[in-house]
Image (tube, rainbow, N blue to C red; front, side):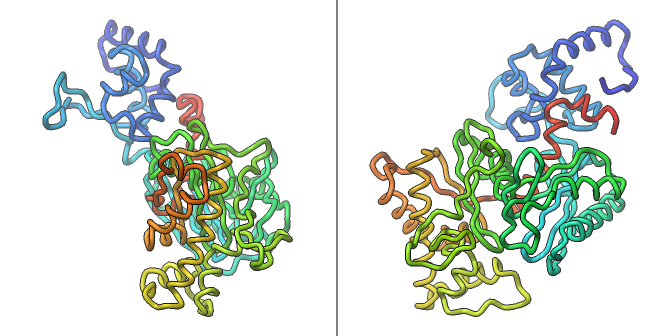
Length: 414
């Protein structure tokens, strides 16, 4: 229960409380429906939960009392709609937040993220990533704590995205290949320690950045509605992949599933950090594009921004065009192999891969269709990721999950 006094008459309050008791198990599912935009009205919430209107009303009222959602006091209906108007539901714009953090090869970013995947405030930090994870994570947490102090908002948890496979159950960064961190760095423990030291309440989580991007896109972006979603992305360095199966993020038995960056797409290609040659990780990332186009990476702007700018502003130059086509073909080969193995119903691309898709969507789709069984059965949709900072939003989703699972328990002590 929210612990607030009930202003309604005794009989009415008792009836509503009884309805809420019956629907208490629906609080989490109801919050997730509003959080992901799948229940914009109380009528939709009632249908999705499979409960009575009265129970859905009591559940919505309790979530509002907890400061998590808002229920429009005046029922309304969309133009042209039929039937009884229903109260509109939305996440509370002034409600709690979580601290989300991301570390990549060019620095870090901290953000406050509310329900609905809405970024409330951000604090980017461009700096050389130190070889000591504790120093870097201390800096990003300090930036996040400053955001919290300035916002005055209630914090219910923290999530961290890192460019490495994160092994479960200990939260170890096993292959931070583009960071100078030691293999097996206990990033989750360090992050949690820095969170507690900063006086930030709530549990702390850490996971791979592309996994988190896929989670965010599935709940709030280009992956919404997909059952089996494949996400492939390249950020500042390297290539990552993630898979949502039957609506849930698939991380394998110990968090290490879908290391797609080490699929071979060019057997005679560049040596890879993993010991192989011609992997997606070194054949289809920003550095690969700049190298193929004969451009020297600059020292100030991030590799991702340099590569994106090159594609968007110079794609008509012959050397750049050839480089773009080469990377599209290599990416298409990798995607075709993944399609044959995983049979997704949608593919979404992030980072430079999103820019390559925008530059020549037909070429990429043709390569995937020609080199996979999907070419014989209609093709799989390939879309661009739509969320800004989707790894940050995904890190926030980790921190929101305990609240989505059981709002009353998660907020009881915070």
